Image (tube, rainbow, N blue to C red; front, side, top):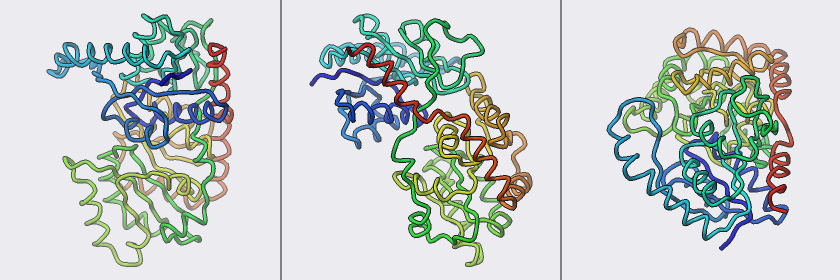
Length: 370
């Protein structure tokens, strides 16, 4: 098996979804591609489902603090990942590698640099992550979602492409969502998500605020499945304690798959973390949002993502340090009670999206495929 383009990256949906969007367009244009990713990241589940050839390698994590895991990663996982990446590239013989970020992309980019395979890097966030800052040293082109005003990358190699959206997310149907989740078409829908793994703090605050929120809205809550926090069973207990008139307005699910397109089509508002994937989806689809950025991320990238949309008028931002049930109730109810404001926010969020981002990235890749 060979591939003209190898995509490398993952660990989160934000690093996986852009690659899937690019892969879909490559296949439309009869350009062969394959993916190198981790054994346990979200890409290991989502990529094979699409039929894209997938190669799993070992991967470590670059922690900027002391942890025993660093020893094992540096001594075993990183070298094994490098060896696996070299072997995979020798077998696939690509003309170009697209790195979408995450620590699994680094050994592939190192291997590509050693093998003299051109590298195109894609950065999804307003603040580049550590893996991409390292990988950028080897990249021929650096595709960015937003203009690089901070000078994080060499200007001569930067091209603004935007962040691709998986095409299936544009095909959502509001009526399908209403039928699937037995929604009331007259009541605004709030979609709550903390990302694929869920967000413990958001889960608990939403659970505490349920009676007040459900008096004015219906909620689909993607809570993750973390046995350590026990959020899902706790939320289901909260639902069971509600009056039936309110309980029927609340749907809690651990993970959202293909039905995400329907949910976005029906949602009046998203309450979410501000990871690159979620922010891009809301902007591309014109979904107004109330973002609760995850604190402590590299460069506080989620706050930077959220503030960028807020400045455009497409979102509100509620820092986690200020997140309480009372504050969430107040913010959400102010928004869902003002449909004209929500519509305007959605339109302004859409101004940040680049609708042909996948086409722009594919155009860069094909420079090296010719």
